[in-house]
Image (tube, rainbow, N blue to C red; front, top):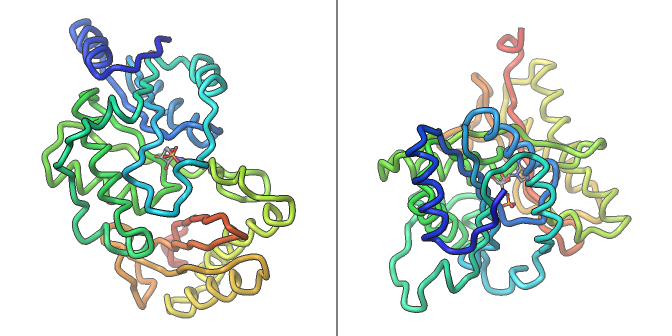
Length: 286
Ligand code: AMP
């Protein structure tokens, strides 16, 4: 495995691999890697001959007052984990290598980027779209792997690649969870002991929604209310949103007449957590 920090080096290494007839996968990350990230790397290694993992804490997707400076960073540990998974290249640009001082053009996410996370973090998805477009241009992968953990991001990136005819296929990968159901996240490291215990409320709320659907509830508003009530019953959690939405357009829906997505975001102490789950109406589960 090689660690490369310049765009030109990565571009050259990938070109050489392509000349050998290898298929190429990209796994974009912000580092502080856990088993959720590694599941993406494993999926990439299974589907492509040559795997590039980027580790870059992208400043443009953090808003003012968010945790860009404090975001956990542990590159040596990340490199060891990625070598063990069999990644070919780890791309570790610094901010000034990634963004020219006079960079002026950004990529907008369209309407999907103004909903849910985008309503709370206004520049977030523009930062995501810009950095993903740049990474796809630098690396030129056949496949790009993203986690369902960031479900809205996955849908935004799919639209980005489709609407701008970017020559890569986006592959979504399932959420990896801790034993108690908490979705793995680099930000879980911020939680103290009591907050860590309280953080399972997101998963418990999603399971409550899933159970209602399994029991035959078809009113999506009833299910969304149960989702919200569960989170709000946890004293350490403050709900941002909890809703049942169309899995592609992310619009709220009133009736569970096809598979929908339950999405939830809450702050536990000072830490913002997001999670989601597919909610399938009863007869489609057989
Ligand atoms: P991040 O480093 O948080 O930007 O995440 C990099 C990629 O890993 C994104 O595509 C995330 O959706 C994905 N990811 C993060 N946590 C998980 C998880 N628990 N399960 C699956 N994918 C994840």
